Every structure is written in structure tokens, then in C-alpha cells.
Length: 247
Ligand code: NAD
Image (tube, rainbow, N blue to C red; front, side, top):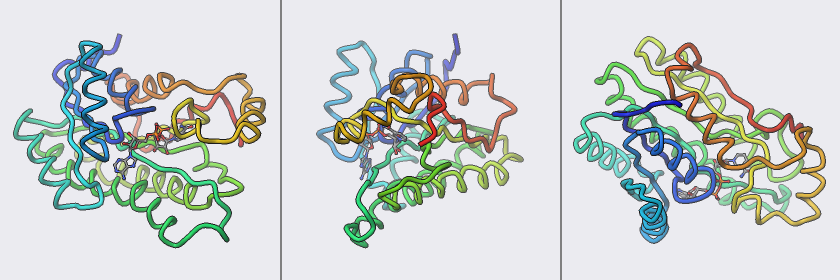
């Protein structure tokens, strides 16, 4: 059992899917857990659901693309809890349209959330981690960050950038005792994959050597390991959690 008692963790995109399971997992491991979502309604809904499971967590919904807003909320959290130990940059959107059908705005929206928001959150949290003599930043990448994908170029492009950010910040921040890693999920059962048509998803599942889609818990456990002292010599890694899927 990994014990994160006394640690403070922020999880972006924590209202559903992978992020919600990460929130549950870290809470159960003893961490003071704070989830971020895109709007009040979804944050309240997630907090209510967690309360019914006897999990009391805090929730915020800053605009992740507004650095000043993000900074303000991060400061508020640091003032309230005294420190921030772990940041999990998980919020993300995907795409699967062909380039001809993708608008410039759609491409920019993906980069804004999947990459720029990750930069903003990390930039806002790092000074507090430095003040606290260390921390852990974990990013949600994707298996498409290794292989690309045949349609929806913005999504893999953003996840390649996530890997670049992860590896570079790991090198920059190692001297400050801040470890930076990413988890690259394969095909995981969430709303994101629920929206894919049957004819797309079924062949994908068939191609997974472990013979099943991943569960959000599979990813949450990988984050928990990487956040824990068991991973104290791991930084700059992109951990593939995909059942050996090679899409
Ligand atoms: P999801 O759609 O179920 O959840 C996405 C989360 O991101 C939600 O909590 C939502 O509140 C948040 N979000 C969306 N738009 C936002 C915005 N504008 N501002 C702030 N937050 C916003 O998706 P998921 O499958 O749980 O995906 C979570 C992460 O995992 C993403 O980064 C995704 O790219 C990655 N991922 C998912 C899969 C998969 O198969 N589901 C595979 C690889 C990687």
C-alpha cells in the first residue's frame, strides 16, 4: 500500500474519466486531494459523487488558459494547505477528423488545453514546489505520442509536445528535487472513447495483446506509483500503460 498521507495533490480534468479515478486513488492513499474541472456544474457533480463515497475533496474551475487566473487559484490552495506536493496535468481533449475537416480553431483549442494549460499549471505550481524543496509533476500523455494516429493530427501533435515538456522539465527541475514524468495510456474506457463509433473501437480492442481496453484504475495506479517514493529515481519517463497496444 502506497501511503501519501500529508501530501497535497492537484488533479486537472478530475471531474470524470481517468482524472476522477486518479482523484479517488490518491484520496484513498491519504493525500489531500483537489480536483480541477472546466466549470462549476461538473465540479459540483464530481464533488457530490465523491462525497457519497465518503471522499471529501476540494474543487476549483479556473480557466486553465488564463495564467493569472490559474496563479491566483494555485496561490489560494498553497495558502490553504501550506504546500503543494503533486500536480497531475490530466485535462485533455482529443480529435479524430481529417485535416481537411479540421478548422484552425479546433487545432488551436486542442493545443491550448493539452499543451498550453499544462505549461500554465506547471509554471504556477513550480515556485511553491521549489519553496517546499521538491515535488512531483505528472502529465497525461497518450500512446498516440509514440505512434501518431491516422486522423485527427492535433491530438498526437499535442501529446508529442506533452512528452517534450515532460522530458525537458525533468532535466530542468531535477536539481530542485522535482520529478516530472508522464503516463501514456492506450485505449481506456472513458467518455472520450465512448464517443468513438463501434466500427472504430472494436478492431482497436482486437489489436490489443492483453485483449481488453484499459480501465481508468489502470492509469490511476501508474500515477500513484510515479508519485510515490517507490519512483524516487524515475524522472523524464513516459510510462506506456496500454496493454502493448501498437496503434
Ligand atoms: P474525459 O473526456 O472523460 O475527461 C476529460 C477531463 O478534462 C474532464 O475532467 C474535463 O473536465 C476536463 N476538461 C475538458 N475540457 C476542459 C477545459 N477546457 N478546461 C479544463 N478542463 C477540461 O477524458 P479522459 O479519457 O478521462 O482523458 C483524460 C486524459 O487522458 C486526457 O489528457 C486524454 O488525452 C488522456 N488519454 C485518454 C485516453 C482514453 O482512451 N480515454 C487515452 C490516452 C490518453
